[in-house]
Image (tube, rainbow, N blue to C red; front, side, top):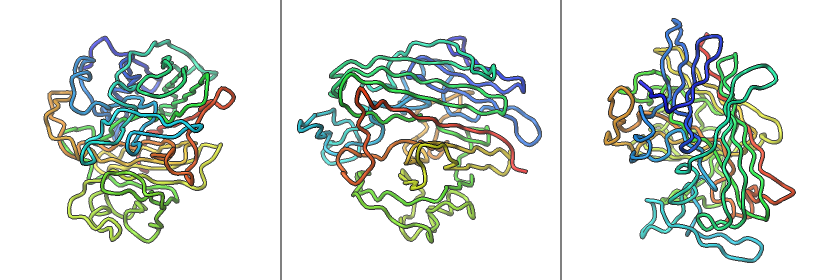
Length: 347
């Protein structure tokens, strides 16, 4: 059971969402299956201490300043080169920057405040001030991340980042989902559907090459016609024998308005998760690095493919690819973003 150190939101349907100030994390989500049974569909742990000790550092966390990878842990901004921590396991030797650095947003203690929206729905707002030079990034950034638990069994996430000078900011939420509700099962039998998109080509270090690949006729398009396992193993683009994926997709039609970017379904429970976003990219990661060394909720080892992360965000390694949408912010151009996670059952 979750301990009292977590922040609980509950709606009139009995659905509950839990959060913590450590990393502004979303740590649990209790939603019904087709028979009305409430189960938690978010991977994680029973205590904040468990999150702090975990091998997988990013469960449910807000990730930044820049989520994903930055090649060679460097970027050029306004004529100046900035050097960041080389903390990614990929690369020989280790040379790339990952998820904001060694002490990124996922390891910070955020301030929290309970809030209510105009529909009288309950929420929690987390705030954090990232100082100039933190993890090598320029500028002071004031960040607010707000989660609302809505009456339609959704978590509505809003975020804003304001800087006192030009800098980079690209944040997301790194929750792992397993819609079965039994974390001893894996997610390879889930069915994933993506909105019209292209694949952001990456090299063996998971760094973008700058190219976008048309996958409209390939199974890695995730059109919902087969489960996650078969979609990966049937792909001619990937041509792999193991279903280990960390893939980035670009959505050309996403702009200022929020649109449906992904749906995830699990047949046994009947649960469905629909994700809406106004961000141009989505990272899909099926937790293939998990090896059972982290013991999660209900004393269940979190093994390979125990969950899937679906992370709306800006393009990966954007500062090193001029053809990618910029992730630069400035005093007169803050980062504004919204992700909505809608839970229901398959009709």
